[in-house]
Amino acid sequence: MSEERVLIKNGTVINASGRQAADVAICGEKIVSVAQNINPEAKTKVVDASGLLVLPGAIDVHTHFELPFGDFSSADDFYTGTRAAASGGVTTIMDFVTPEKGESLINALVKRKEQASEKVCIDYSLHMGIVDVNAGIINEMKAVVEAGVPSFKVFMTYAFRVIDKEISRILSRAKELDALIMVHAEDHVSLEALRSKFISEGKTDVWHHYLSRPEDVEAKAVREVVELAKATGGKLYIVHLACAEGLKAVEKAQLEGYQIFAETCPQYLNFTRDVYKRADGRNFVCSPPMKGPESKEALWRSIESEPSHCLSVPNVGINTVATDHCPFQTYDKDRGRNDFTKIPNGVMGVENVYPYMLSEANKGRISFERAVELCSTNPAKIFGCLSTKGSIEVNKDADIVLYDPTKDFTISQENMHSNIDYTIWEGVKLKGYPVQTYSRGALIYKDGEFVGDAGHGRFIECTLHSNVEKSPF
Ligand code: URP
Ligand code: ZN
Ligand code: ZN
Image (cartoon, rainbow, N blue to C red; front, side):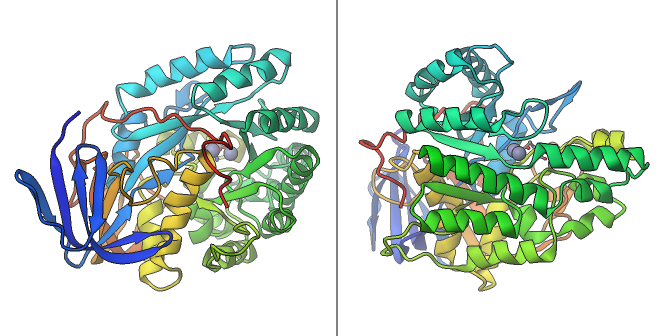
């Protein structure tokens, strides 16, 4: 392990819990001191952070790198995806293992780690997908938790969906194992009925992607899975929540004291369903789709509420902002030019999420502390890596972002670091931008340039075991 010393001087350190004018001393991979006026030891590299904010790196708990889709795959692999992440201040990503039906979960985990390990430029973890439910899978979940993967993901739609009875079984098992169940919530029966109707009527333009998966389709599934979590006592995490009614159901259950968490994504905070009327609407196709303005406002209301850390009720509402980064090249999206059902689903965001949320903070919509909480601290708490990630504190990994609040930035495909040939964020203006990113003490991004290395990232073993990590809130 390198014992290089770095001293970040004269910045403002922002954690979810507050801010302080302080220097941050790094030795090797760890933060060793956060205090005022630290004197550099011999051979210390001193970084002047005057006028800059010193933030914990973001943790994007929802990416899909190298996701197979028919005969092609999502545009970013673990190298280009984590290169883009680092360039947007993300220092940890969490991606997914998707086992084949009948495949051992542990085998699938080993294979996915092999696929990622030589490419990742930042630390990473994985969630285990569950595509069929049987005694063997339920049994094997324990070994997966012991391998450092305490989060499992199921879909309520798509070909590999699992049905309510099976979700209940998984939630009950998760309770026994101190694990978390992540759910893609859209009601399969209603959306299939709508899709079939539109196809039979020849209504296959992109706007009908939205019309086939409107607010009710998502809200119905969210309400359903919330009830399953309440009945079983299993910990639930709703991924990419995009609708007001779904959020209401989550908030109600949270206020009743259930361990239910919700993630939204920057695309749902910045766009509405109107994007599907644009000429490039296919590029915005993701599921769930962007919704109406009422949903966007409801999500923002929740983001804007500053949770009080002394309240006995949990942090109510949206708990994390992650990306669901899953872009496909324009020519792949074009496969559905005349038929929305053939457009591969997914949009980009891993390089945009932290700059976007921090820019909203810089414009005064939320505090910087809240942006850090949503993008770094809560993800670390909820997914079980708070002992090393999620804040700037002594003994934590030196995963640090220096942020210049005076730097104006206009997002364009040309200044992004992903492998994708467009961005849905083209032309979006940000106030402030990250200028340096450190991953375990190593500088990996500086002034618009990625300067990291493939293979630098490590697999992070997570744990939600109650003896080790206290309940998040
Ligand atoms: O459209 C999306 N979100 N694609 C990625 C897979 C998923 O549903 O999360
Ligand atoms: Zn999903
Ligand atoms: Zn996803």
